Image (cartoon, rainbow, N blue to C red):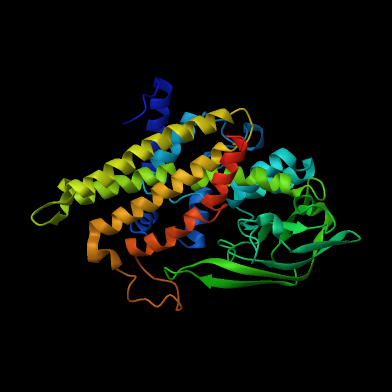
Length: 393
């Protein structure tokens, strides 16, 4: 089922399709289609192409370099990018920090950091999770002690996605230990080149170097890098997480992946007939497609509700739960379609060795995507949020 677009929306859709046909590098799209790991240069190249067109910060207000698109325009753009095998936009700077700075940052911070997000001068990573402070993020123990014009930071962050590429981190730190744990947290912007920072790789189950541990030892951060007020960082952190959870839903990527499952299942045979004609398999595909159509509608409702400049509320938790479950189901269907071929470029690689080269098979994606229902706040935590904020339990 497809949405009924207005004439203006159809014109925009054609514009996006033409842009992708002309500006998306064919080699880059092929890497995405084959499931190959994208390097830093690949991601930066695509971000630069989008920024040159003015489409990189597509959810920012126009006055800060955004597009002013309607929710349907954003849906069209994300859908067409997914169908064209465009790289996903790395969200940490443009999708997470940007909205926080626009809402809570000082004018000086906006003038300095927002243009650097747009032009790629800074690659941001997220300093949230710690050992013992994942879903219970408010239990974080990394400290920042005021010393004149600086904070001195000590502690550890973990699961820092693409931190090996980052030159900047937005980081939650504890600035008060005698208050309720949510009330003693601050939001700092930290230069990753500062003495005392060590980044150590974590090799994931699929053999890739995607996440890291980050250690801070007497790291001095200028006070002007504090966003908002001291000890009010929990408010900013929750605001950021609603954007993260909405993005994790990955509606466009799921639509493209399920289309690929259906195309492959139509030509792969089992016992002399197409797998898509197998009743049990077809039932799973149909259920995933129905769930995805429901997700598409809910996603549009959520982004429409915040089109005036607000933030997604507890509805983002609904998107996060259903979106991650659907994405995990699609990776399971991809494995079933390919059978033993799903192990290509994966089963013979020791994940303790160097990251995979070449194509990463569906088995690798299946194992990697187990994380989706955990990061950004586990799905169990999201259900608690829904129970409290929507159901009033």
